[in-house]
Image (cartoon, rainbow, N blue to C red; front, top):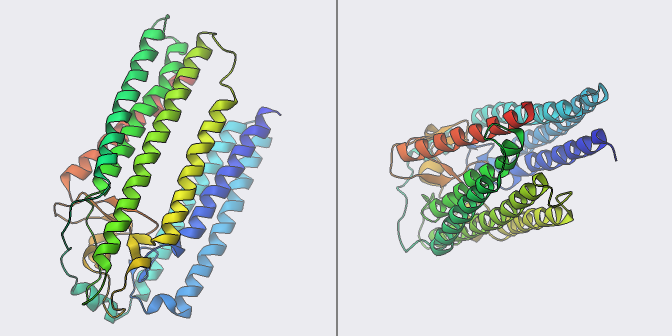
Length: 358
């Protein structure tokens, strides 16, 4: 199988996976939210909302086809890798542009009653010790120790100069491991204490639903961090052995290990979507007359329905579009964490680029 075929195959799989996620995301958000905008629980069941989702589906399919065409055409011109990257960029940037467009259209649909409900949003409820924190701390400690040990092993295993291509090649994967997996574990830890956005009303079970959802998400992210760290550590060692000519290839075990991580994440996300719903919405029994409260209902605190900005102690809050939690960009600690991760990620990317140029 030639290089171009393999690269185009990866592009096809990536487009199908990412495009499929774009098609699914509007269907797994909390009721009352439409493309990241709070429009009220009543409007999302009406034809106008269904037509908007239908338009989104068609636009996403067109974007997927366009991404594949761009990638294939560039690949046929003899630049398979460039085609892969360009097709992926078209998909990701196009998806962001589409989302912002549909978010603005959803904001225009927001009825006055939903705006009044959001204005009466109640403060978040507090209670109980966060669940899943022990596993999150375990994941953070394991990821830090394993990734640091792999990094040191890569350094001491290298016999050439620090500027040689083999050294950069060896250090690339351990660097990803050192940046990515502890950050995942840290997100799991922060998720255990994320701000809740619950429904009001007497006799409701919104608080219990939030606790269950939060614990489930924290546990899934913790186990994902652990499995990813194990995979990246194994991959790092295999790369070192290949560079030192101890083995001729990475082996099929690498693919099998990566498959285990992907299957685990997919199965558990489906379990959460089906069993809990975003924010535990499927387990809530609050009155339908009571809106989503606090930051989830208040459109004023959200930029494009993606970025939550509010000067309160919360570092993470429930996402509006998709599943799980997001950072509060009105909190300095959250801003520093995200900025640090971006800087480290760009540094690792620069390391990989330098390795291809030397």
